[in-house]
Length: 213
Image 1 (tube, rainbow, N blue to C red):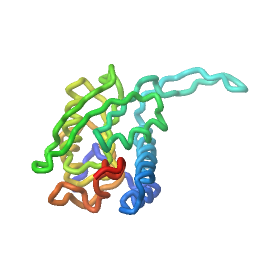
Image 2 (tube, rainbow, N blue to C red):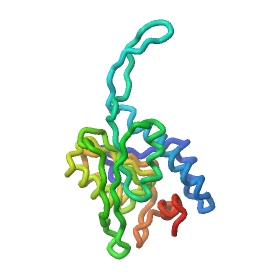
Image 3 (cartoon, rainbow, N blue to C red):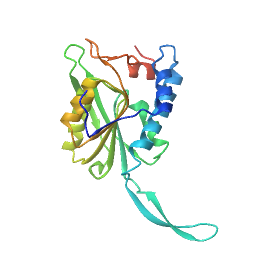
């Protein structure tokens, strides 16, 4: 796959260990959900280590007063792409419990494999926040591209996209459609099958998160 300046593929051994368990068809719904949250927390730490909005405050320690950087209040928003993206929200809230959450609902037409939008609810002032758009699976890239475009149309300028598993086709599509958006993927898989599912993948992330078929 072509290399893109706005794409980061993680090769962290701890993340890879957790993904190995995540893939296993025998992993329970509870453990699957916990793993998605844990992987998301590790990804969030990495993708926000450089440009999370901060401000300086004065802190009084038991010994003296010092200047310390803190994350700006109300500076981050999380936008999961429904429904599987919901599984990643708590993993970010562990680090940023005050982050506002918006929702974009999309489903994939099983015949055309094209995304169809059905719901959008975003926090007030989201255009001024650092927005983390999350979906565990980046397959064809259609839903991610449409969600990012929708947010841009709402005035969002500082966007990042996070996926746990990505197919080369989807990564390339989003990277080229949105070169101004940094894309973070825990692992890049081989390809898509004829039905648009990632191989080797882990099946349908939404079904495995919520116990549906």
